[in-house]
Image 1 (spheres, helix red, strand yellow):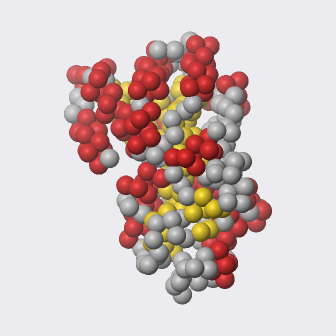
Image 2 (cartoon, one colour):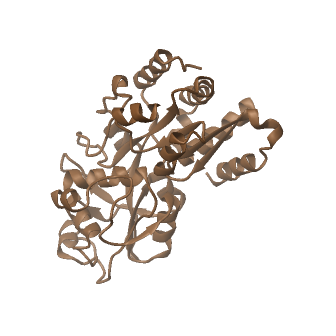
Length: 335
């Protein structure tokens, strides 16, 4: 993965005014950055067209496409149809992934710690302050948990990953819904903020006894210890390709609503409870630019599934890809 990132960075640095016509500019969510980076690297090698994607957070991606300063925006928090109409935007999903909890607790190995929605909610509300709290011990009777303060890490920027995470907390914890709510940016009751998935991952890596939430590829890249989580069926599941796929299997994206859908707390005995899609946003009036953007994502839909799986993202089902292709045709933005 690092090789891909380095290669893509080199592509960004080599962009010059003379070949600016061969560059597609995008900005937004950090959640899908690893897979977009890998796709862009491969696409450049095949076509000579550079995808200059700036990983600045979903809030920044929405802002930049609203201001028409990029060819496409990316957000993990889907925009409601009325907001899309207000800002004159199109929207469709590009990839599915999972938000996972990562911890830095000496002596606790990957996948050993179990959490449920209520306990996680109370940690982020600041009501559970130590790792040996009775609620955590009850879920983990086999673990020797330390009498240490929990260091809560969250995002500091406007974030679709945060929107997915807080949407989940609002569904499983009435107190969170009433006191904090869901959104790309919320007033956190507890903890310190890191910018981007990268920032949260780095904080957790450096801070002992910490907990944070990141897209799974960042957990793998930084060798962070993820937790198991209790899903809506009452089962403790690990984050992996199969459990993300199980969450995606029940998703019913409607093109008439510009594919607006949240996937958290999905039904299914093996479904990972904090899953989500990442969405592409396009300005309605930029027909030719949109066709170029969609040509890249059409290439990714046809050629990028194995790369996505290797990075532990779930490619869109073929049925959904075909819905997106029809959506493009309907709005005259098919490549």
